[in-house]
Image 1 (tube, rainbow, N blue to C red):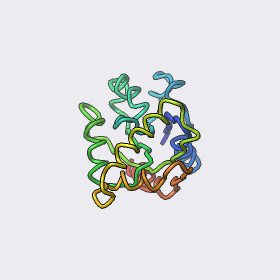
Image 2: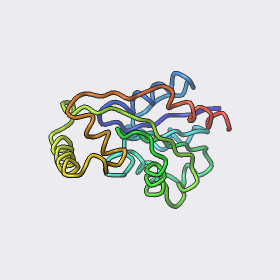
Image 3: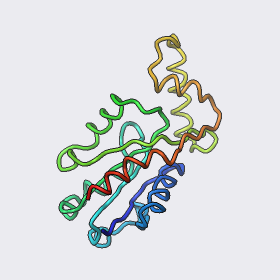
Length: 175
């Protein structure tokens, strides 16, 4: 079986997961912005990973734009975010992003990093506004992601874990 791993990573966590998947599968890794559909279409399995930004999965536009060329491929999508795994939230993200021809594709979540110092100015400003908004709530009423946001403060937190790729590897084996 021939496969390829595409990824779009803003701060490095998604790339780390893509590299771990490559170590386990031997599949090449390519950034979505450098991927050419003629090259990708030569593979049997296409794995796409992207960070979550405003509920959207980065890099997913590559699949949407090229889905007709990839319709006979096994396609697996994973997303990476800083929030703890929460079934309801992941289902929302999947439902929001995996529509139309993407609807029944396997979809996975991997936890990433939080690094305010490493963020660009816009992301850092948006996160500070979000934290300010959340801080007005009673901590007893925090949702899981809000508690994680407030616990992280401005410290660097790295929750990447190779264990998150195990379900993706199992899905690949189903081919």
